[in-house]
Amino acid sequence: MLTRLRVNGFKNLVDVDIRFGPFTCIAGANAVGKSNLFDAIRFLSMSANKTLMTAALSVRNETARNADARSLFHRVAGKSTDIMSFEVEMITPKEAVDDLGQQTVATANFLRYTLELRYREDSDRSQQMRGPIEIIREQLVQIPKNQMGKHLPFEHNSRKWRESAVHIKHRGAPYISTEGEGLSRVIKLHQDGGSSGRAIKNPATQPRTVLSTVNTAESPTVLCAKREMESWSMLQLEPAALREPDGINAPFHLAANGAHLPSTLYHLAKEAGANKEGKNESLDEQAVYCQAANRLGELIDDVEAIDVDRDEKRELLTLQVTGKDGTIYPARSLSDGTLRFLALTVLEMDPYANGLVCLEEPENGIHPKRIPAMLRLLQDIVTDTDESIDETNPLRQIIVNTHSPSVVLEIPDDALLVAEVVEELQSGRRYKKAKFEHLPNTWRQKVDPNGQTVSKGKLLAYLNPCSLHDQEMYSYYARVGRDLVESNRKGRPKVVERDDLQMCLPHVAE
Image (cartoon, rainbow, N blue to C red; front, side, top):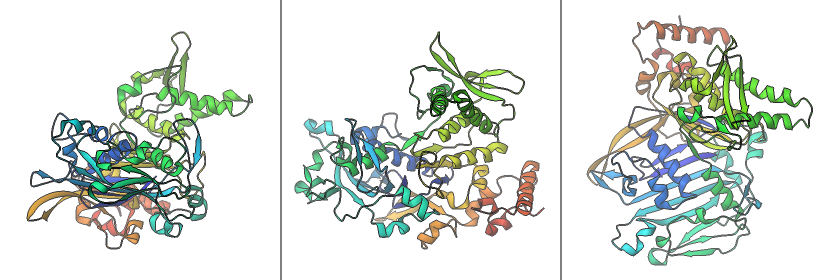
């Protein structure tokens, strides 16, 4: 779980410092830096497993058809800077399996990882295999137990959730450290027992991070950090992949593009039946399909059942939805929005799907009236911070970005970050950078009283996205007003429910 991210010098992310809870929504206009934040997370995830150049070339490039590592570095007055840095705070898995199949347990799983990189103009062709990116500094340390409250500021049950999610053994020494300067600089990998560390000489010549080279149980905490960063995924659900049937022996976990949806649901049902040791297996399998159908029924009305057809002759698994009139619709005939919603439903049901999921514009293909159902589903996917971490409450996290007013109005107010582009000066030269602001009187302001809060004026585009005479918006605001009065709702308020924004909302009191 990513709890904090600091980025400096990556694309238009300059001096960015964001704290994350289980669910975060980043709203903003096009081309302000929302996707760049996702790119930074993807780069870090890839660098935990691949070479730095592979990680750099995997990030989308807006300015050229061919990817270029130079394009990742921030530009001032048309000229790229040479340094970029990252600092992440994260809760990692307590256990991990190494590349040899050995299971290992971390000494601590609340960690801070720092990576500083330089772009090097290198004309030496013999060194081109390592690429032009060199490591200036790499460090992995634990966050002390007495600072957990400060570093986990979002609302959570400290007895149930925090004690089950975080394990810390007192240790002062780092797990990865950088010593020296220039040609004498070395990066050291320390054992969990507190050894002096194995030096990785001359890190400028190394094509990858030290963290990415750890593959065995000899360094359990570093391995757990690597596994956590590897699990950070960009969920880009593609209708073509969602519609495809699966082979009987296909992987049974949802891919980033939505592939293996039938196989995942089929195996979830089979596993539910097998857990009953032969008693009422079919009933437990059907319970899984009924759960998926009930959830999909929140999006579309015409849902009677969901199941996966197993064709033994062709060895295929095909997802199908049965309507209330008995008509069977295979996945290839379902709408894009229905398939995306169904994929997220299966993700929520899968206890083995852990880690961070980044999702762009979840409202795509969803009717505005059904967006609240989509947002409820997304918030149900993430870890429940009032309960202990276990198989029914895995350590899952979601970050979405959007520019939809319908999404902004419906999310919890403490989950919202508003992104915009601002101009600043550096050495007399103007440059643009992304800025991320939160709403006042939320946990983000409590932990950072001097942080940037979004003004009501910047929220007007989301609060009043249409003409006041638009009948649909009139009805929407009227419904919100009735719900507030009639339900006397408690808990985390939505953005549209905040008292300090009511004057900006038309018709709410009607």
